[in-house]
Length: 238
Ligand code: PGA
Image 1: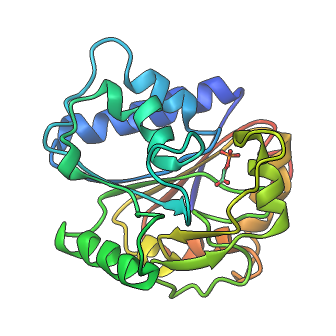
Image 2 (image 1 turned 180 degrees about the horizontal axis):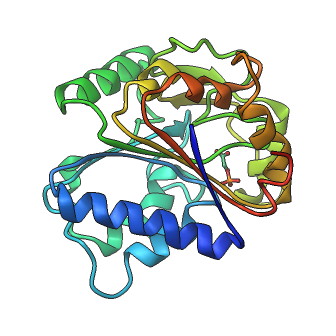
Image 3 (image 1 turned 90 degrees about the vertical axis):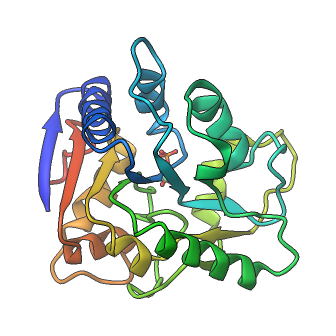
């Protein structure tokens, strides 16, 4: 894994933005894997500003969605993606993919998603965040490194970290559909972005040798082309 450490979170976002912009301008028909969460917000904000690369030929696959939330729910990742990216770029709706958290048959939905990724030719550029428990997507500690897109149970620490996106007192979904670690490892390029002191421990453990299923991010040591983009705070345990 290659590592780039920028002094601030803003500089890290600028760096990742430049990589994504270059990917889209050099390869306009790229298949992108896209994360949600706080970390990529400033990357998407840069991408939708000013002279943007065209997303007309791009295909996107989000990492995950909560089971039980529809695309109009304010805390759904479908809403997040419209707000931060898709309402502002020219990517056709039929080329944007997010797991359907309301599917009657979640297992069939996970298979459908996995097949759609395969049919697209596979992910060219996968952007990932890292949870404070080192999860990638919603692959929580204990996830098999060969796992495919599937139903997962969210851990208390993830639910705590994400409670801020829900109304006070609102019940959080306890399950999600996530792209699997095995699915992620097949991406041709992976960029992991982490910022802030709260991620320092997870970042440090991502590099632990040998990789362990207790630290989902450590699976990325097995991928062919991985770049980890950090700010100084998140890199402080390296
Ligand atoms: P965050 O989440 O960007 O909101 O910190 C990262 C993640 O949980 O993958």
